[in-house]
Length: 369
Image (cartoon, rainbow, N blue to C red; front, top):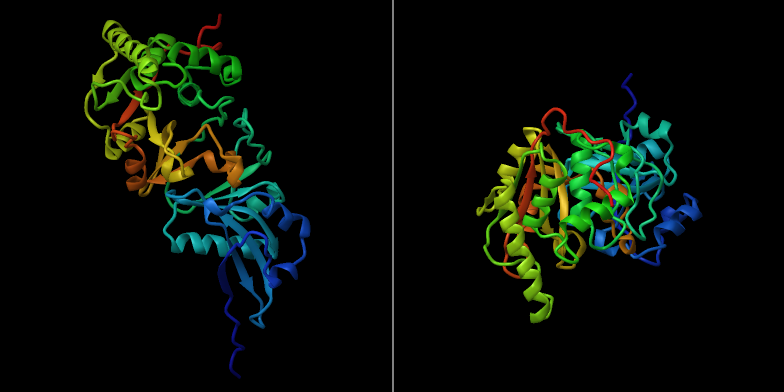
């Protein structure tokens, strides 16, 4: 007697349209979950539904809302409904088909037990979420291949201009040069005050501030222009005095032994530095990930096949972006290289921080007032 044939599982991927809910999704119930899916305009993050079809082919037995920042190498499950394990495995198959490095799962409805059963690891609770971005209290990650990543603390910047300060503080916290409990708003603003070019942090000033705060940490600045940077949006008179401050920062760098490499730090060099246990504070444009061309600092701290893993201290709540997106974020090598060319002149800026020498740990972090 012939063995009965199993009905193959059929996964479908359909766009998630604002204001509409597919009939098979409505039949699964969970109206309060679907209402959250519609609560913000997620269109900038290519929202789509990954669903599992039933035996009849018309009904769904499971579905997940999936989003991701553009030009990155992950997918994020906002929620899964119905047969949740089947929905999650459908997302994993979808991500593998796209050759992505990772999937994440926001903790709105996911339990620690269901996440662990699906092969996810819990993310550490954020020390702070970025201003205005109230994400879930929990989140989970599942790597789809080999990844050399140790999880740093996640800290969201409390202002629109302290990204450089936060990336430096997170780097030094992960390196053991600063105690985790010292990473707070006071430390953020104290370090920003030492590094700022009013209001942003430019590469040389940021590198000088790191060296001053942690004298035993090797620091190098990488900046492929001799001209003042990040001033094009200001009037001529406003540019003049900030340019003067940047020249002073170069003098300070020379005085305390912070080298300034005039070459573009390539993604290959970033990967090499990270794999040696160093941290790279990288200046990028947000045009690719967020849709507006604003200079922004991120921290490169891990690698995955074909991608560099970053920490982004800012999440864009208006698009459904949360700390789960911004934390342990893999960006494909080519995409990261494109992001690192900062308009309008396409310059490149970065600060590399080596392993602190013994005795450099500071329980209090940067000096306060």
